[in-house]
Length: 337
Image (tube, rainbow, N blue to C red; front, side, top):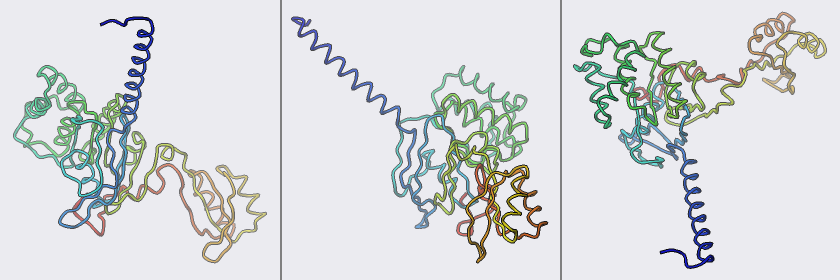
């Protein structure tokens, strides 16, 4: 049925533009949604809390590092994101149902399958065509330098070789979300470089990464956000601008005359600024900010001049995070990582 006159035509155009506008706004809202969002998520086992009120947003193409000592809840968090365990409380929201997720757990068993057989099974479970599966398997075997082992049973593989197959199965289908639990474990230096290049390329193509690591270089190279967990709770979150800011040291000291110290220290390489004097440990202290690479020189100079150093604080970059990347177990929880 056609419009009867020009008024009907104009009305039809208005209605069409309105519907298109609504459709575009809906698409924009969908595109703005995070891939996954956790709101005050908690998990308990036999009444014992292993995660408590953890909130997190995972955007497409982003990289989120989860760090913390053994027992902090990192593996539980990754298992929840993978859909392997249910949350006890809070909300877990997915942008879309049936999202393709790749997951490399911390431990991978030595199966009787060959890498080629195992990876073909994984590809078929995801509904991929045999030709596409074989092409992707060949790419990954070359990337991780396992071409000569493609038809050998994995039950005889070393820990490092099993870890390579573990990583390959998680990347096989080019997932929207890639979850990696201690991905560098057992890998030699060339494999670590290959892995970093591979996941960096996937991130550029839009894959979201969430990983738990003990290696600062992974955070420096990939992370947009860092969540620090302690006994199941997020105690600190750090964004990309903070991560990549230049670190510096703030020195608190006493025992030098203000005029003498100002003149001498200001002329030294690495001097940044004077900060407001404060009282520490019952003393009036001077505060100076210096480039981190020159901190030791400033400390020696202050001590040689007869001053006393009260405190030294590293600020910016990965400062303060290194201690949370050591595998030392939590005193409150020893088995869950």
